[in-house]
Image (cartoon, rainbow, N blue to C red; front, side, top):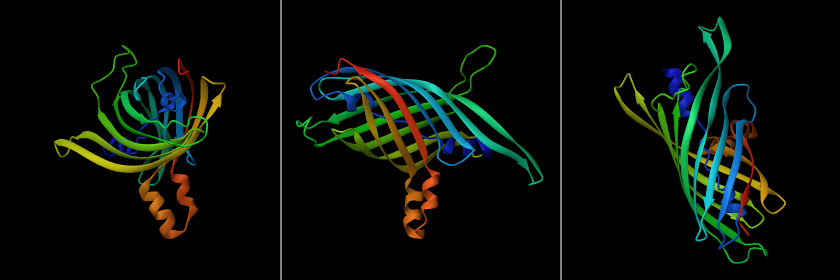
Length: 232
């Protein structure tokens, strides 16, 4: 049980706004994106693959749904004498809502803002029947970000991870804050590749206090590729 708690408490929430970033102000767009994320410098940790469908309205509201898998890679050991590499896989389902505040100077620079709300649930998938179990945990993310018209962005987020603790016999909430930044590289006018880096604010604080850049390796990299249609 302790291992499952550790696995879930380290889940990385994915709350991107790719479609909204590609769409010009005053235009609606439908987006399809594939995302993959993994630790920067570790053979262990969580690897995610997610497919998301998003719609950006003409008045700035972006809504989306997503599904994918999370694979947790860890070392299973006993008393330090024997162990082996192991992994556990979970199914991800979720949705997200963002609102974009875009400026009018779409081709002369400027800064745009967005606020977002993201929900993800994790379940086991039965290999024989293909059906999902009841959700084992839920991750809610509130985010505030800004991005330039050149599609570089910076985001602050708070994640609340909720699960049922069988030892305590009650629901438990764990909160963490994260910093995320990156950029969207356009491929033509309707497609793009997004590269981002995300790290817990506790590591950022420790990095400055101890003047040790090694803490920077505790983050995660995400690569997303897809396109927005009807954005112009």
